[in-house]
Image (cartoon, rainbow, N blue to C red):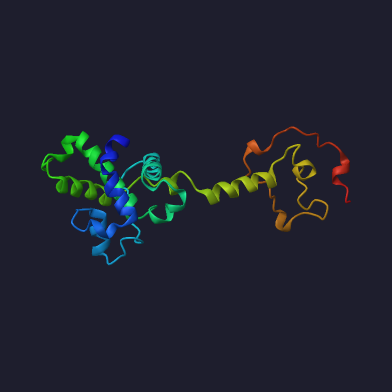
Amino acid sequence: MDAALAPSVKVLTALLTNPEELGDLYIPAKTWLESCGQNIRTGMVPFMGTLPIIERAQLGNWFEVHIAKNKDLRRHWLGLLPLAHTCTLWLVSLLRKNRSKLQKIDLEDDNQVLEAAWCLQTTQTPEVVWKSQINVDKECLERLEEEMFERSALAGIAGNYQWGLDAGDHQEGWNPFAGTPERWNHDDRDSSSEDEYKVR
């Protein structure tokens, strides 16, 4: 990654510090922001193509280490033009390695290769990792439910179906433990004591 992006350090630094000075240089993400009427310093660029999430994280890390060199500057590049162009440049390097995708493009014409990379970046959609594989809210809720409904020594008396037994059955015979995964029953406590069923 460093070998592919190192030649563009000056351009990327300028995009972070003073993007206006790069008026003559073709930067597809900058052109896109301007065509949308967005500020080139603050406009979000939501395109990353099909790059895997790990690769996107590596690009962000590379940018922080080699260009920003200061964690406090993240708000000036993360999700913005500087990182978007870093992504475009990375895609350029991948395209040049895989020349079969550049059959109709003059490899010597940097603008044509940049345009091809930008096209990939904006038209390809990444795997929907966040929706299909990781759902933080759902995972947190599952962990809370496990702590509430597990039958274990750690749960103590509460793990012996003590939800309302001292006050009577739940409305319409509702069983809060119905449908809980079998792995939540740890079978690691003695629940034979009648004391657990006494109102205290």
